[in-house]
Image (cartoon, rainbow, N blue to C red):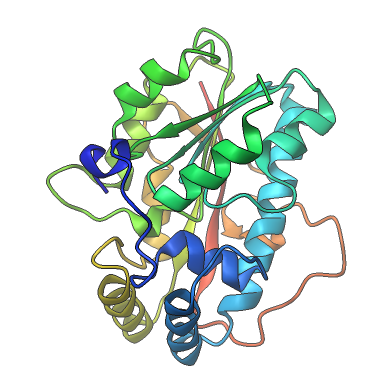
Length: 274
């Protein structure tokens, strides 16, 4: 996850799984290769609920974007680690509320960038940035093409922080703090990632994903660690649902694919910026 990788026109490595393509496969998408499907099969052996978790997480993204646009009236979104295009992408959900909504997608997966540009080249209110999501100042400078940072912005970190390691380039909490420092009052930040309270699951999945993706992975964390992300200065958790399994965040349907096992969940919520 570095700018040299992100900004170059690297060919897609079909033989090394990517988190984005694995997620696409779990959602029933078509932008994946045998290597991704094989990695998912191994992951499902360790964490059998992963497919339901992925589907429920995507439903959460749709709900939270619609809530932000409808309830908070925010018309600007930055989606960090956006992944491959699928149904009900952030810009489609936001623009269904107000066609003037502007969306910046940030990712450094070559396949994501290629398909994303092809899908969105005719939408003037959408921008795709090839960047490491930890390069906050660079992202802000590039996003300023369509984002007015003097006005509220929704910064989305949905099911992506487990891809961010704790290393010399930074860590999720520092990245969130840097992002919040650039946001106007009235902005919102959405944070969720894969968590487990079982050390065995955290260790096995983290090791599997690091090995499979060529070390393009961070780690599975605990609820307490995600709670800490929300202690960044100026953040205040939206209290009605608080921090929870995202399946239970403002549910709008009974047709949720409940996980049969709870070895890990997607955990987080929404916070406002004061």
